[in-house]
Structures are given as structure tokens and as C-alpha cells.
Image (tube, rainbow, N blue to C red; front, side, top):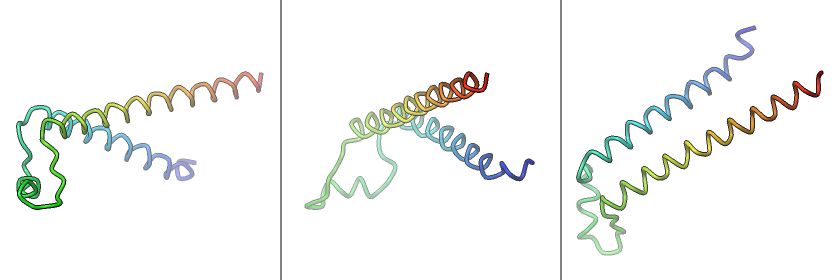
Length: 91
């Protein structure tokens, strides 16, 4: 029986780990003051390269993570409603 749901368990574990790493990345970006990547530092001097200041980039990134959590909670509430509808339909 457990092997039938193995793929589901793997997907749920992957989703959980992605959210954990997103939280880690958001906290890391909020506690640092500059990009650690040399590409972003060189982009200021190259013509045609779009440079995003760190203060803008970190809040953009953190807001995207927050929106993903909001979407996940909305999906969870939708799935709860579907589950409740199926239970009441069986009664």
C-alpha cells in the first residue's frame, strides 16, 4: 500500500524542502547588505546589462517567497473544502 503513494510522499517532501530553503534564502538576504555574486558587481559597468540594486532585489525576492506561501495556504484551504465536500457527499 505504501508503494502506491511513494511518488506523492516524494513530491510532498520536495515541496517541504523547497519552502525550508526559501525561508533560509529570505532570511539570508534580509540580513546581508550586498550581492555575493561577482556577476552582479560587474553588471554595473557593462552596457546593456540590467542592474538591480540589492535593496530592491532582496525585497523583490522576499515578496515572491511570501506570495508563494500565500498561494500554498490558499491551495491548502481549497483542498480542505474539496475534502469536506466529498465527505458530506458520501454521508
